[in-house]
Length: 391
Image 1 (cartoon, rainbow, N blue to C red):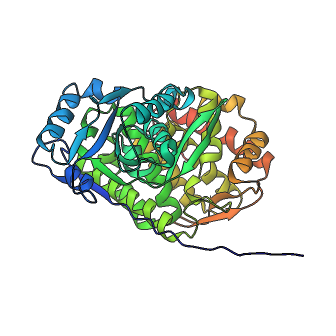
Image 2: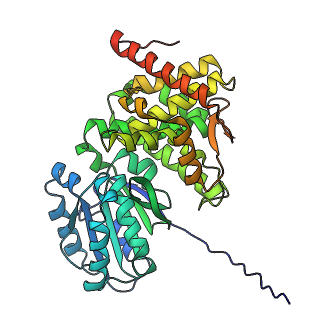
């Protein structure tokens, strides 16, 4: 005997991605309106802040408290803003994740409460993972404080922590309740961190939007000096493309193996692990994008002029495309680890033109190894000469 009931239902997800300046100015009602959107009375709110942000914004915690006090009809803080560690350490060590679980128990947080997380991409990943798994989901409002967070990591549906040295091994696909991108937060971000976030914009332009890539070519000098207007334009356009892929790509929770937004990431993830946090994610992505673009060129998919354009935009913006971690990069193992990360089938995004990504299921390991050496030699020569060299 065989009995089978086929169950099927659809779940609709909606969340706003907002852009503003001075989110905690008392007259800025954005955050208040988001929290009161579905509540007739004040909601219990836990505000979590990346300690790195507080160093650059010493008045931030007081501003958050003052904002909550001004809008007490909507926001009921369950405690003073909680300052947590930022960077990969918060994803490697479960201290804060466990603490948030404890706070959810002792401070009366529930599925109708809010966690407002303000910080960099790694901190948002870890706090998002904890919020998604406590009570099977506490409403999360992300407030990315970095370029990378505002244009990529902070606007998507993924949350994760690292486990036994494996990046993002434990995680969830849970959309945030809302995202608030406050441009004012970027002013105190270190130059290297602001620059690192632009790598994700180059990445998404290369695989989806030639016009956006050409915009960055035209404005590369402004981007190199981190001009606010150019940077904000790049953030909005990159976030929009990222959201469009999640919405229209047909696989928002990555059930399949195609991950075009992970272009350049198979090597970037491994280089990050090898560097033990020395290499910023965006810096590693810039290297990974350059490597896979070079491989696309050497495989006959990308023209020489297009490869030159990719190399030029990355170096013009200020990225170094050689790293000591290359000496310890086992290409075959890194690809196999990435295959496991994808769910068992290797699917690598390469370029068949600017703005046109293509998926492949095999990589010529010897050729990729030669591309690594070529990229290292090319970038070493450029650095030594103090100018851009194209080969």
